[in-house]
Length: 259
Ligand SMILES: Nc1nc2c(ncn2[C@@H]2O[C@H](COP(=O)(O)OP(=O)(O)OP(=O)(O)O)[C@@H](O)[C@H]2O)c(=O)[nH]1
Ligand SMILES: [Mg+2]
Image 1 (cartoon, helix red, strand yellow):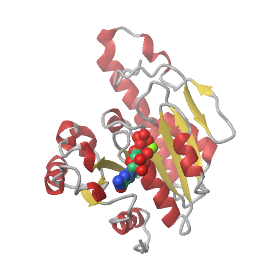
Image 2 (cartoon, protein in one colour):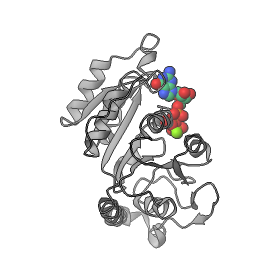
Image 3 (tube, helix red, strand yellow):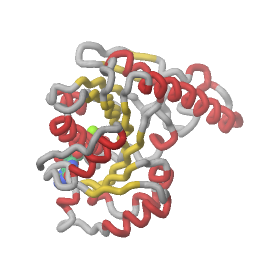
Image 4 (cartoon, helix red, strand yellow):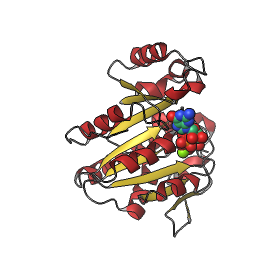
């Protein structure tokens, strides 16, 4: 069981590209067999080890000019839809590589692969988040070219991904309008660490009860420095602001895209 979030991730984690699929121990090793009374100490050790690996990932990417974004949300908020659209719109300007995190299946990797982008699927089994060791192993398979944008889609979950630094350059949290306006106050930790909050599926606003301004206020109350964008990954409304944000993170001139 994961000593940090108690999510039971002791079974094998699989890191695979289209040609390979194999089991790995996920690196928490002997930490799983200690009694409950040591949970707090173990939690600190797990997170400290993760932070160390994340720092190594960050340095590896920094020296290669690779900018990684950790994209997080509850299941179905639209992460893969947004990633596919982003690759189709921006893929001609700089190389984009993707790491897909899901408990099971290659479904999201297949959607990304259809764009022609490099993609590695990480299956976490019972685990509910990606960690820095998984990213290290995925990078060893993917080897993004220098200057790439690396889009990491985390496992659909608003809780555990908040705790684990992957070595990314920025954390992006999506919330979609049918989920309801109260997600930031119910799941404050992930919104507190976000660099960008995206309110997705705004095309559904006429059909769902969702107060955009109230949601923005909640997110800003938890995280005064956060930027909030509203968009629809399917209609394309709001995407130019998202692309400008990416461009700024990558140190590029504003990216103009017709939608
Ligand atoms: N109306 C509308 N539907 C959307 C939008 N973005 C995504 N969807 C739909 O929402 C559903 C889930 O989208 P995904 O992109 O698979 O969501 P996800 O966050 O990647 O889901 P998991 O990987 O399972 O966590 C799909 O049916 C999408 O077509 C949007 O902006 N508007
Ligand atoms: Mg997805």
